[in-house]
Length: 283
Length: 188
Image (cartoon, rainbow over all chains, first blue to last red; front, side, top):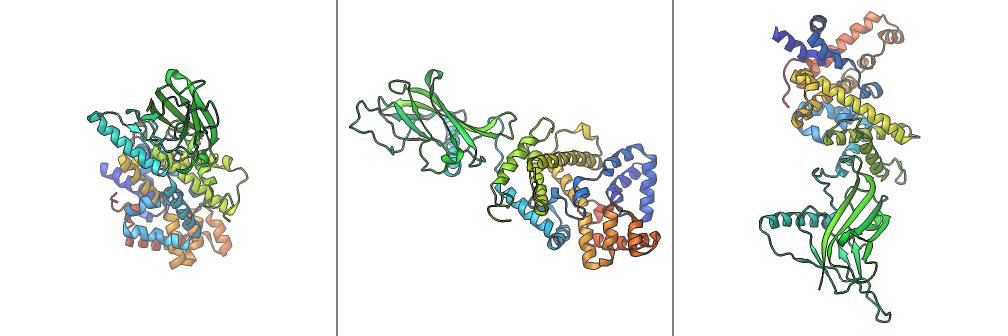
């Protein structure tokens, strides 16, 4: 009896598409009339899909949009049959090309335990390098090293007195991942630290980003709001400057928080962004 | 479509539309895995792209919401269909999908749903006289309308379709598509 059920279940898709011979059709129909379990299995096949209703006679979009994933899993003959349709159907062919371009532009999956935030290009490579370094440091603790800062684009003018002491630009590269924060050394008494922030991966140029700097004691040491595209490029101007309300910047732990206005699809209620931690020291 | 056109395939508007679809699919209304969410988002955009080629949508976000919702409904229905059929189990009992079987199910259902497209190409190439019958059959139209159009009796056009279908079935068998007829299994 189990064989009868299995035989009918196996033929349900063909029965639904009307591809069975008359005898097979009668057999399946009669069994479905008698068997409630098999009827329940057949029931979901009675509904038409959106594709069947709106674009009959074409390859379903579910298959088109994942063509590059599915194609290697198809038998040669199956692939040839579908390629035959693509060759004859401009609509399906163009949609497949569009699907391919979308997939190619798709950003890679990121770890979910904590939002993994990478910058573009070299920033992403630098981030991965630092993550790897942190993993090594966890196993074999080593003395902290100072993060080099780039030569400042603007120098203090000797004519202005008293001149604020401006540190060289700090180019952030690696979003924090819970390891040791790098040390940034600035000249003793520095009161301004220009900070360059890398762009966020997967966030478009027209998004807006807000950046804030929290420092020792939970105090704010600056904030800014700008277009995301202003962060693009390794030679982009500093996104903001950290400065104390008065006097030099205190040494201690700082955090730069970048938040865009683009929602994070993987974390409902939150937005795409990144955080960077560093320890400020003097030299 | 020109390069400055927001519906051009290279337009940055597509990234915004993708972000919008992701936001819609992240709603608690849809309980989706991250992977399913991404696939449905991509499908919705391909669907919107196709529609935009015939007529520019006046309210793209509204249309996208509708497309996304229908895609999600189809996704859940397809899951229910294939879990019962392949696993022989109640879909309600399996929330955590095995990625490989999910892909396999999606591939099988995609191939099966492609049969009308495959049939159309086959008839266009080998038996163009069967095309009206195939369209009538797969689009769920009435035989009597086709019969009236051809000035034939209904039984005659149904008999013609039976012969057309037999040719299609033989072609599917010869192309290794016998599994869709329930004749043998398909691996993977």
